[in-house]
Image (cartoon, rainbow, N blue to C red; front, top):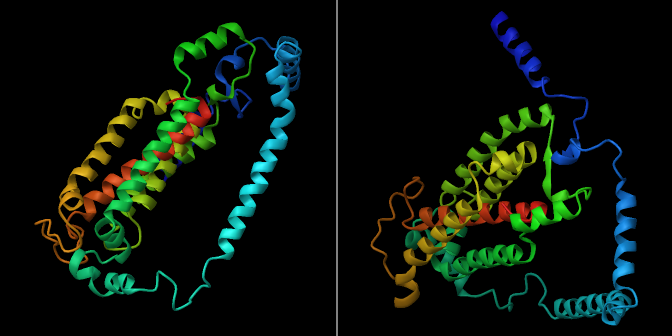
Length: 316
């Protein structure tokens, strides 16, 4: 008992060594800069005045865009909202017997899903066997969305360094790092392994229980974001870089496409993959559904973390 108490005291002392009276998230370089910093409001005013001096009266197109942008954006928002409301009004009532989705397809999934796919979870058998086309498309949509966000928001190191040199006093939110937050870091150190393990469990059990690649991948992505918020990009990039993201995403999508290409090119429901379905309810069962769930989970986890890193820093 005394050894555990001494260990707890030592842990508290060690955690407080880096605490300098400020536990907020601060810019690494600005923390070391001179104390007479300009406030955020003054910087915004300075930027607006600089923009007005440079562009006002010299760029008629920019001035015109400033005037009509708000009106055009509001008009488009109202127009598409009306279109969506009208479209929803034409949808059939919930539970109507003549709805297009009330046909023999759901009945086939329920009655023959376990026998034909080997998956106890009917949803997993549906999205990764019967409708594998759709899931492959959804996975590629996530990848394409990540590529689009990267094209729009990615800031290379050379451009970032130029901005720092030109405006050394600019408070850049993309480079914020957590400092001195011992409570956050210790708690995340305890929670991240548990959350990561739970995400892996959800992925691996998607064919025999509720879960799968989409939900498990979201949990794993949340664990990566928790670690990033606590320890910053410098430590996170020691094991998860842009190259790691690219390799995992490409390998997962390529495996999915190759694993199901026989069905894509050769047939429809009932085409045998020659892979044993195993005993329903066992972890190694349901044929290709388990590895496909793993591939989908990798894509979802990487996409979630990639979005967060790009919006926060402009890169990995």
